[in-house]
Image (cartoon, rainbow, N blue to C red):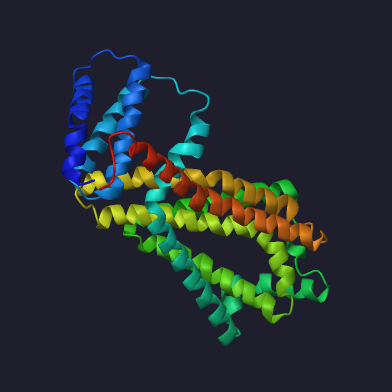
Length: 329
């Protein structure tokens, strides 16, 4: 459908809704919520087919006003937390799939840099991981227990320490996006180079498979959500560099809010990764099939929540917006 026809078809409904909001007319909560949902559906449709139009700006402002009216001085229901993770965030995150892909590409490239550097420079691994860690790991390999480092600290202490550190890294990846995304790229680079050199080190010592089936029990989720946190930083950076039709301040404010939502989404995953590292990774004698199952299940969970599920929700939301009276031409 052409934008002009879309606007003409729904203009009266939008103006009526806008009048109700501006004149503070009393409206039953059920009716207000229904109108808000309908405007949100139209906004989703407009973002898809007329992404840089004034229609998107208008509907976004209308939806924001409605949201504030609905939730002003209203005690949040107990399922607000669940609603955020199961609908609100995934639907929002679909809009940032390009930033997610860019974050993944940056991370992957620097993993390659780490591997190449470790393979061509014998001192590189020590400069990245430190002499004490390398020496300790060499000793563990000599004792036929290359992953012994995960057994040295108490489970609960490791769980808390790792979880807090990972959340801190995620927050850094987001907040440094304020430097136009360069700071975020730097955080991604640091972690990726470390990962690449780390894995090459175990490959070089002949214990690559042992490291993969152990480290990636927690590393699958941990690394994945660091990339997602990088996406949050790139969203913030883009809001500063490319405000599009918004003022730079408005664009920046939206970038901060959207980036924070992305970071908040990673917290449960960081907790899961910390739990796995503290309580499960140390079980190095577990059957290979079990460790592989945990790794693949973790990968499927992350891919479904951040890639597949948002696409499913978006398609469903678009179909709803493209319901009676709205047909593509």
